[in-house]
Image (cartoon, rainbow, N blue to C red; front, side):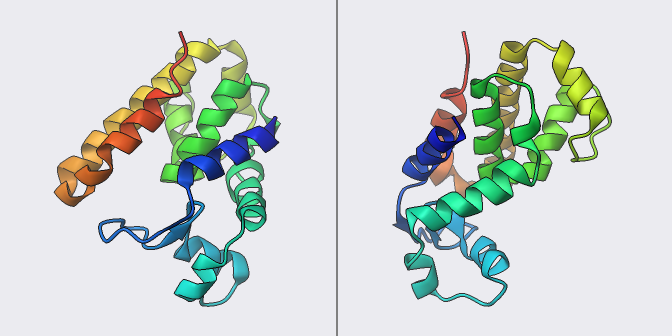
Length: 167
């Protein structure tokens, strides 16, 4: 199922984009210059960003946004795992884990450990998923409130967060 999750992310993120108001700078398939530099362990150019393939993006997403935060080790429904991964791509996986932990009522240390997993096991996954989507929407409001130039991205961020709501 993770293959579908990553493929969906790549589709949502699209190809090469260099929007002047994007604080992440130029991206390709959602991979920023900073992420690519970290991945390749060297400075990268605009040409390097443009040359990112879907296969490389898949490798980066799987490692940095699925395995490293431990989202692949959680015993949760796909819809919740998909949102954790997607939210992590947009906001950083450590922040997402901390948001999850806050909602679960466990110490928000950004690492998925036994306390987080135990709390996950007793929480309603649909309710938790929807609380995460609300947290995303609240974060969008705070971002735009701090920096009005980011309002250009509001509709996309809101639609993306809302796409994860579960009835």
